Length: 316
Image (cartoon, rainbow, N blue to C red; front, top):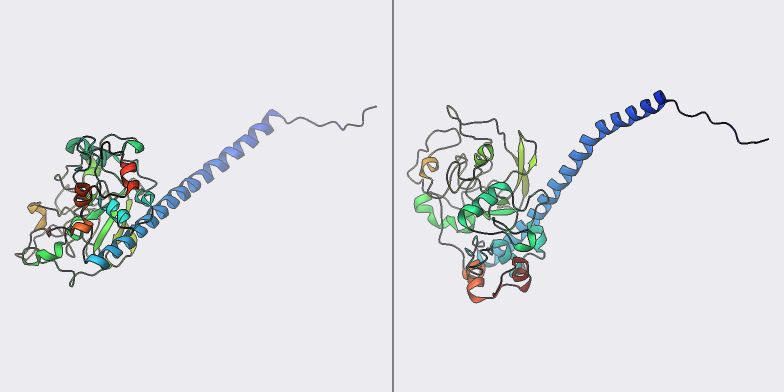
């Protein structure tokens, strides 16, 4: 006689109850797990930007200047893949790993980056998928990159009067440079809203309504900046999204759409009113010394071998 005990099979109802419980647990835990993964990516992006910020600090300590933005693809006139300020930091040995130049949430490139690349005929490195766009996930402030503090007579900008913890040095970007916090192009999926120099800053984290971007400041700190896509300027449909009293590219309280030759908004402030000043020219300086100029390394063919390989430059 068999000694194996008889086991009653699960009924259909019992199986369905278990399945329902598992489904409920998944529905409860999945959003939390997704949020945790996104938070980890945000932290990783901020950590990469912190390394870049430190490297920029080394450059400034040595030359009292920051790297220029790019070489205009002079190293690769056929493939049109640009060398940028991040490549300068690596070639000068201020930055140890080019991989920190990429944010985990960057689509490589993001849509607005790809649009600008398409319009201006610049390409992403072939090894990263190619197509239109500018390399890397981070942008440098045009003011800081060009030594804008040397234009005080026209812009009123000086490093001495700026608060280092408020002055933007670099951040997550849709190109390799940025003029201000303006992001109106996000709402219309058009990099030229409000003009060609807008939408350099990227906001890859947070939520659809409240996206967040990481920014590095002149005191070497890195912190997230939240954009409210529902916030517009008074009596206008133009996106404002944030306040610039404690974070700015040029001057406290600046309009988010400030930029090179964008006179319409350079004279306005974050409240939509006008500045009581005659020094309203965007602070574009004379540029960097040759040691920090991407064009110099392209013209003299002195880029680090790693940079040349990653870019996929043919015939360089």
